Structure formats: structure tokens, C-alpha cells
Length: 264
Image (cartoon, rainbow, N blue to C red; front, side, top):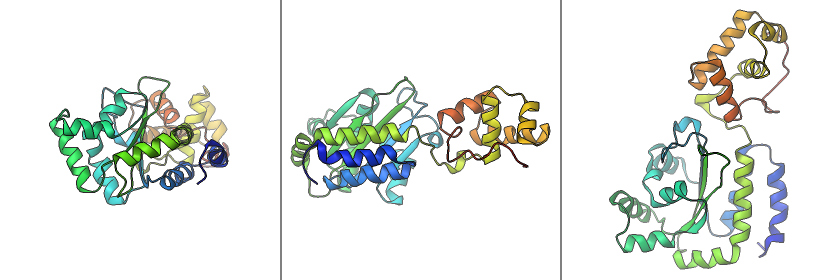
């Protein structure tokens, strides 16, 4: 890829026009891979408390790694033991992992972090870049980790970062901003079209009877849709369901929302 920000502008345009998380992710990680960061890990939560991301089913976790790596890194919670995770939840900005190497060699990491660094090194993860994104509220947090390809060490990453810092950050920030506005596909949090429609009408201030007329179903059917939506979102009230579905971009999405009328 040609050096300089102008070469990134067509990519940024394509990312801005993307309509799915997968599309944005593929465009961004293709760019990162061309710079020597073939393995990328991204996480975002709207339910951060202290260093805890909340229910993993409500968070977004993306990786270019294998399914086995995803289980190891995300599902088994390995990411939370790494020093770069501690840095990401406590800071905003970007940094290379040179500080991790230096802190490890100086024995300045926690025992758990020291062990995590050793485990990463055992699978060839020794250098990279972290970007911790600024958020609009205290409960949201997103971060991106770019892992250097095998054979690329810390000093080489420093050189890559020096040359391509602006492009990397521009692509990363747009990727993040696009992802958090798009619906996240979650099997354990999925809503049917009718459940989404019912929640959208409630969000508009409609009563159960109003929703029944608008959806051309019985009030009992509306209550069933709302109950199942609450169960899917694991909340107790419909108000909570509307709030959570809104936070997770599950309602009022153009490609999710079909016609609001018709038989159930």
C-alpha cells in the first residue's frame, strides 16, 4: 500500500458506506494485515463496571484469529489477564507493546500478567499495538489490539507505527464508530421481527392496545411478543427491554425492521 493518508481515503469511504459489522471489520483488518498485523482483536461493551465488561453476551468480540483462538482469548477470559487489557480499560489513546516487554523484563507486571505474557509468547504473540477508544459515557469501552505477524518484533513495530500511525488510527477509529452504530448479531440475544416491532412501538409511546391495532394482532399476542423479548434480553420489564435493545442497536435498524403492519 502506498504510504500516506491520501492512500487510505478510498478505504475510509468504503468503510463509511458499509452496512454490516462484518463488512467494516473485513475492510479494516485487510488494511491492518497489509501493514504486518494479520491478527486483530476488538472488543466493545456498553456495560463496563470497573474492569469487568459485564455479560459477555452483551459485548462485541471480534478477531481475525481461528475459532480455537477466539475461544481461548475471549470466551475463556484470557484477554482480561493481559497487561494490554489493563492498559486499555484505564487509558484512552494508542501505544505499542514496547512497554509490556520492558515491564516484563523488569518484573513490574502482576503474576497473572507475567503468566499471560509467557502464554502469548509461546504462541508467537510478542509485539503489537493497542488502541483504546474515547467513549461518550462511563459504561462504554472499546479497544483494538493489533498483533504483529510472526518474525516482526517490538523494534520493527515501533518503526511501522512511526510511519503509519495516522493511517492506522484513522482506520481504527472509523471502524469503531461504525461498529457501535450497527446491529450486532447475537444468537443468545436475537429478537424476532415481531418482537422488534412491538418494542419499537412501545418506544414510540404506544400502549398495548395501540400496538395491537398497529400490528393487527390481539393484545394477548402483543404481550407474548413483549414477554419473549424480555426473556431474550434477560430483563424484567418492557422498559428495560426497550432500553437494552436500543443500546445494542437491535431496534430501529433499517435492514432489521420490516413493515410494521400485517398478521402475526
